[in-house]
Length: 360
Length: 68
Image (cartoon, rainbow over all chains, first blue to last red; front, side, top):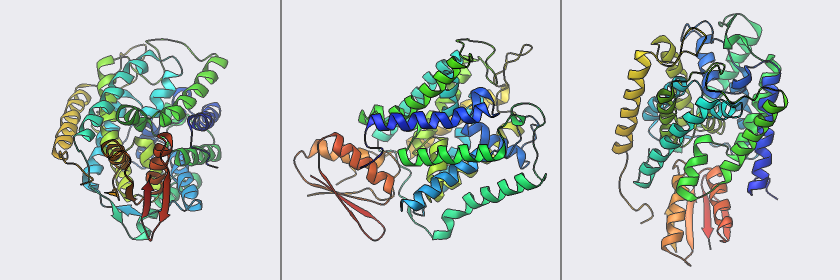
């Protein structure tokens, strides 16, 4: 009997993944960031010195846990296969672009849903951009967009980046080589082992269910398939119940933690994430899971996201959070980068689309 | 029999190929070659949701799926 073959079972798995996020928020992660893939990759980029934004530096064990959780389950279930070679350099740059978009919004699609579950109205408005981006990507998929086939790769290649992450975590856990924020979001975190456990659980569930926040809308648009929606809805429900039960739910436009209310840029930032996620075959979370399953293209996408996050803070492309003194949102660099990223996405989508019946 | 080669393609391209073939060739058997397990699972679930039987045969590196 399969544990993931219908929407009800997937809904239960979604609820379980939400509980892992709740645990992380309860034990110290920022409340409305419980498990944000983009934010946590950005924090890792800061911890290893790729950027110098002092408030967002911490080697997040959740990222390592997600990748290893997916890898362990994939190995147990004989689903670990080392493949790669599907336009890796394009994927690298798409990874950079995807995370720049996420950092203009201040969150990946996972955090978008977490923020929505806390009543964060700008996140609900940003959802419009995300759906639009996924829709645009789906349009190009229908026109024959493809990054080409991956092929069997040498076995060792599938372990390289996951093992580097594990070594990084061990270094972070036992030494003070890496930077660690003393204030701001980077300083807010659950204890290391709880973070790692939360990541392992979340990664294993995501591997088993093929959870993907971009794939959710993509599959609805292209295949009228609501399986992935069921998982994400379960995740959302858990966070919503947690926020209501703990008095943290409040529908509000302004004053949401580590967020801004510059709606146009929230929409465009998430438009980039949705569009790039469809071109890449999965959202930032899904890239981590695929990397755990041995996909070296996703490992390269992860490296792109890591460097993209570093660049976003080095070059002031990432948005600032709204405070009592400042409206937050992207500065001029971030706005220019947003437009450039969208233009590049259209260029890649047009370049790699070909009208052709594939099964002839 | 319609033959599809979806090996190495990213999601959801293999599923789009299958959905397209099922629509254009109703009643015909379709053989799909895939290389990753999650692609196999996606196709299995999709076919079961749409009332088709599926036979899966693992091969050396790839997986053969026959949809009836």
